[in-house]
Image (tube, rainbow, N blue to C red; front, side, top):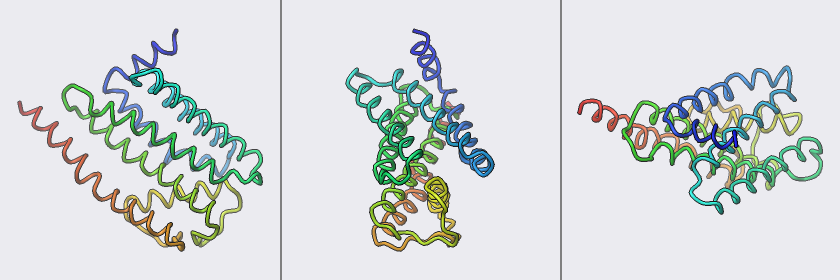
Length: 227
């Protein structure tokens, strides 16, 4: 009984969005530094974070039992595929693992969006929740790039080839955020037409999302504060 009560309290206030934002900042900027020294520990921390956030959000926000069951199955499958691929990288599960990650992050993004746009005044926490969605899009596209690389080997050209699957995932996550922010250093280049189309779509999303959704939320928050 304690877990549902804890998750309900966590997701019942807008402050949960601020906690999520801080956690993602750690995940993006701190965990990669740990990965170079303690890869297994860093991987475990990532899995624990996504598991706790997703399970708590699913139990507190999902409107029906069927939604909870489907979400739990998708997320459990994504975790199982990840660890199977982690311990046996030659099993050929790379594309399936990436698909599971995309679905799980997509469901988590939907949960956060529902929290951002639920009834109530627009606060700075809702704006931080929109930033959380923006960062989750970067993780989702990283999974899409892994899928593309698993289906079409050589879809990406690296200035320094990844030595294993873990380094490949980290490199594509880095490439995803660089593309999302339209920086484009050129150390990773999409070569396959599908990879190039995905990169273009992510770059457009990275430009339009802050300009439309986040800017709109900021305007609504300022208007509410003025009233």
